[in-house]
Image (cartoon, rainbow, N blue to C red):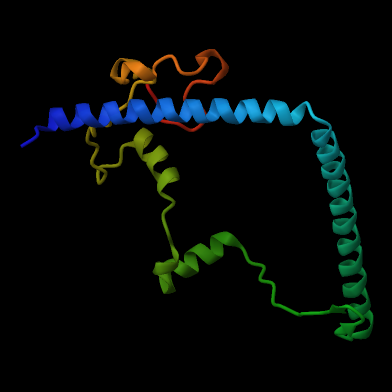
Length: 173
């Protein structure tokens, strides 16, 4: 039977090889992107992309105007149907948040919810007596796992062209 330490060692080796594979894939992607960016096709793509952004903004502006004009016309005529536009009438609530909180405390306590991140930040400072603080270990994986790689794969790509494991990856500090 394999011990936890042996299993961990196997998984670290597997992780090292997967990270190596990811670096190789990223490098190949970067090469292809550089080729594409230096071609005329990329310039054509940028022109089309820029034009799409301009037209999307014009569409948003036109939609805003049409909605505004339709609501204004509805307010004047109470008509709900226009060519290509219809009016829906919903209910908008306006209330004092402090009064609503007091009302919920008395009549609807299930409507009151804790926002955990906010509460925990404050609780960490104020240390309320009902909060139990305990140490919880967490594992941080080293960025450099090259010592665990299969040696025949170590030099298969130029490492200086690939960014290290970053952006959103696990912390190693």
